[in-house]
Length: 325
Image: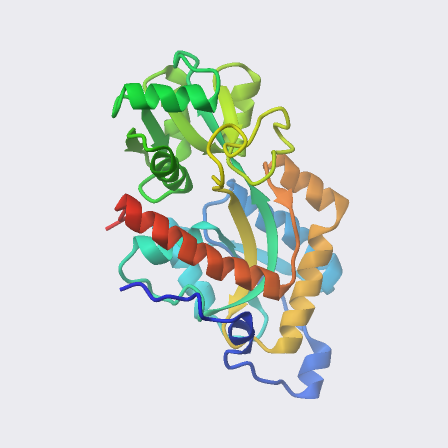
């Protein structure tokens, strides 16, 4: 049964077993390379953020920073490795918003999605893009809703798999518009986008990185983005909320965490290094190229986001009856 984390304060999140180090250890950190675990394969958005930040952290931390890819099981393998790491500040990881989703998709995870981690800083956010094959006869979100109601279970939407961000955004859209479409899960977005361009499927809530290039060439028609604000990559597009579905939001986010019981002084040092890296113009430019709006935060702010998103998606997943098992 899902645990309700709404009553867990950020003070608890940061104070869970926090211990102190000897003064000499505090002043000398870091004395060896820092490892950032990338929980997805090399070449993707998560990995790109890790590498951009790691390269800059070499300057801010005055120490080597290594990215280690440990993909598998929708990010669970690498995340468990990060959770079980020694709380000494030498292993951190970048988690996506799917971290909050997995807590509800899987009956049992090898870690507690909140208690086993120390939040450090948000890294950035990215809206998804609602895009259709040009053969779908609609020009805006209101027309899409009308068509979906007129043709229940005839429109199809693709995603990178059951429980993927695009799947849940589609389920949320159906719930909030009282429509019924058919979800088609793929093993990754590359094949899904290929079939969408080919017209075998109707639409997708895809990442900016996967959708924008094809929207620019006219192979796909974009109707809206899924964030709370318009996307810098497609500023001409309204948000789904602006376009006819009030309060709709299904943005992706990325953030850095360490294992639980990370000493407070190490949290402060790591967060300062990460924030400095994220605020560097070349890092921000790199993240923009990945469709991500760089956004640093305090540990407290990121911790609150982790808790609130876990509970929000738990409610959506229950309503939609989505399960990865």
